[in-house]
Image 1 (cartoon, rainbow, N blue to C red):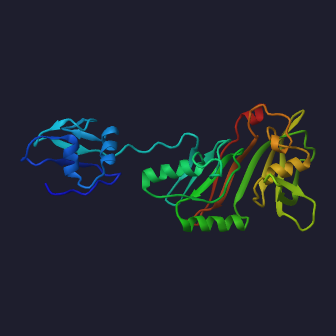
Image 2: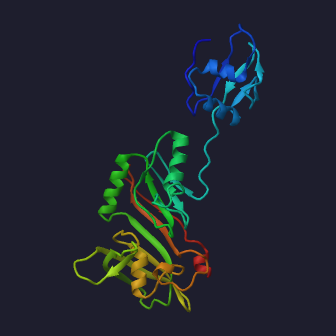
Image 3: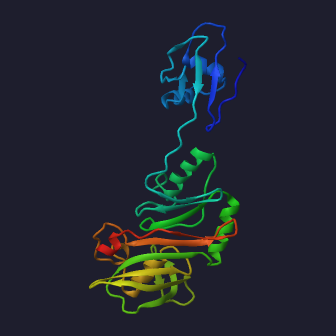
Length: 295
């Protein structure tokens, strides 16, 4: 049999040895069938139970195979979706996931590996050989919906919508104290302090404009459940504006919260809507944790 090209990750190939020639080890037979394949790749095939001899899985490369034995390389099992994330939607253009609190969207100087971008990117690469592109972000402390693009063109189109303030971005937060007004709009400007924490400013001409609309969903004796709609999408916007209002989000120690019953910031991105690359408008939902209401 002449030289064979290396198999693609998604295609299984069944190959028979020539009837001529002496017995070889399975590793030697694989090298003959796939010349130029690195030894490390052969080892991965064996360890991953992808190699069969006469229909039976063989994981040892030193097993002898005869001239008439049939050697088969099976397709790899589908990559499992990364557990910290929940898959909400996927198509040829984009992926929408639910990120848990405590996980970064993208890398920082202190954490480069465990991020939503890295985990999801590895999954897409393993399945399709493609890549993903960051469209927007959530704070590490915030849970909820994120969309990633599968091409640079889709990324640029979606980000243009975000810059034009077109997407629907709705959050749910439980805040300290009783918010009296049933609804309202928080307006102002945000700046970063020396510790890179975002805060509101009253100094004219400084900072970036921030606008958030809110309405009360539920009041308790010492806390309020709010629905918040982003008009602008600045980093830390909701957290800074609610703290300035005198109602920091429960669990948000960085912004003055004195309570932390769930060991997390009680802020969740619950709805995300935008115009899909196909031209239709899509809306995705992620219910806030039940604990937001129970506590």
